[in-house]
View (cartoon, rainbow, N blue to C red):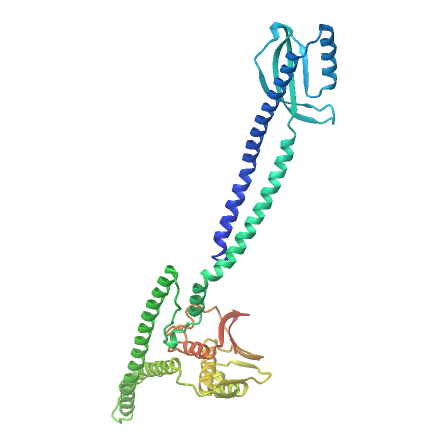
Length: 426
């Protein structure tokens, strides 16, 4: 994925390369046309000088013929030969490519063909000028064009880097503040001042969005806390009344069965209420008393407490606790985290399955036998039960994630070797 700042630079580079590449044949055509025009003028001047000298110098016919023969032998690029009246044509400028008499290479020549009257007789004058210099000129132009392109690209990159550091600095600060924003802290972000209108509008829009989200989040938390507190008393009252009814000697077996069926969902509602209160306390950072806790010791205590439960399902526990890990944390929260993870493993392990607890440096792994992967997208959401066969309050893993979030630990889920694996990095 490329950065935003490199997008226009890439487009500029391609455009500049295309324009400069297209300019080379244009240069060739323009330079060649100018050069041929200059050569035509040069040939015309040669023609005029020769014609002027022929008119001013007096020769006898024999001397002229002798001088003309000598002229055609020693004068390169021009020739003057007798012609007939039928051969006379208008003046012509043209280009030919032929063998060069001096270097044995094929070169281009710009030619002027005219017919003159010398002593009343027609003569054909041919003036030829080598135009090979244009190829060397074009090679120089192409080299200079390439050098200027490299200089242009180097300047673009340098200026883009320098300008972006100052222009995009407010955006980078805003981005860094958004990365560190935590909705649980319920603190708005104070964005810095900038003289760029677009960044000012962006900061204003983000402030409004954050304020709205904090307000909604605060209302949801207050509702959850208030609802949980208000539910505690009636739930406890209903529970006590049901217990009293079960102690009634006149209670029939059918009535007792009905009361027991009421107790089951009532107990689940009570657990949900307690878990919601626990989540609210964690989110409000009410567990702020940290101490040095031995992870291995606390984990072993939880395994011992849950051993009867695991033996009831015929589960095999493989304990691979090695080096001690001392964590600076709240002991109650760490115990809740371990208990919820172990209960989750017990709940999702089929009968006669296996649970493996492995601890390494800075890492804790809890693996249990499983039939198919869980939905990792909904795994840590509230009130999401990952198994219909083992119903729960749907808050256990949400509490685990919130505890990890509070202490900046990472937790992830994988399905490996036919089982569910939770990995926590401290």
